[in-house]
Length: 280
Image 1 (tube, rainbow, N blue to C red):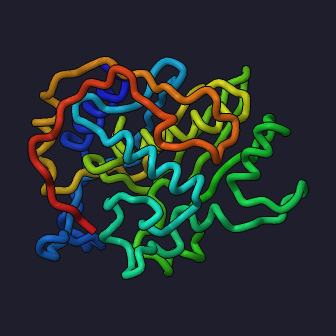
Image 2 (cartoon, rainbow, N blue to C red):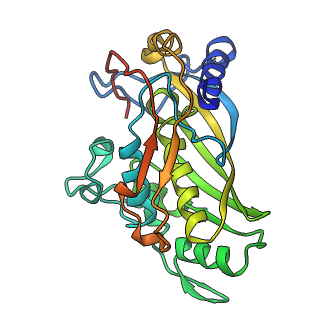
Image 3 (tube, rainbow, N blue to C red):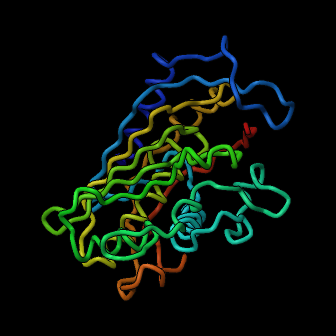
């Protein structure tokens, strides 16, 4: 059984047994199908922790779109694009404008040039510089959430802050996520953690480091009320060992990684038999 599976089952137990139901409150999200309020059952401040040198965090209880998560990671951190036409997936269609743009969200903050003491960099390039030249710095981070930009986007970044630390030749990373739809992307071993772990592997490899610990903090981890019925199906599925992530060892430049440079070896999982509605 993978560590991600254990965390997922615990998350579902916490939400079911002690989660807060916001059914009596006004909520922003609506169901795409009928425009009704999309209520959730939530828990606060859930933390997962993985040693990436031992395990890749991906759920086996339910199949995950590994290749899609890799593409999204490269789209945000390499291309620094906010246009879904550069992504080639349909996961963000409901939030994009008529030109395919998501507005000032996610990668928008990453591509802005900032004047640092060492020169002018965007956030990603400055992080890469620091990892190679000043790995003991305690200010190594990526910040995607800018309060000034929230008004200009339909969806402010959910995964918003990445904090980095180097010790004993290993790159450690803490990710802070303001909100996570557990069954869509944000639970243990889900889409978000897959992309986060891939990013950590990329940064470590091009910086001459090994991967260390990944910590993921979700402030508001929730399941939509119409999705609660799917929990039993997922947690009753077979459990498998975590697969191994293979990364092309020849890549030394962060911007040279391509989707085909990442492969999961031995990934076994169960496909969810039903498709659930989307809340936007």
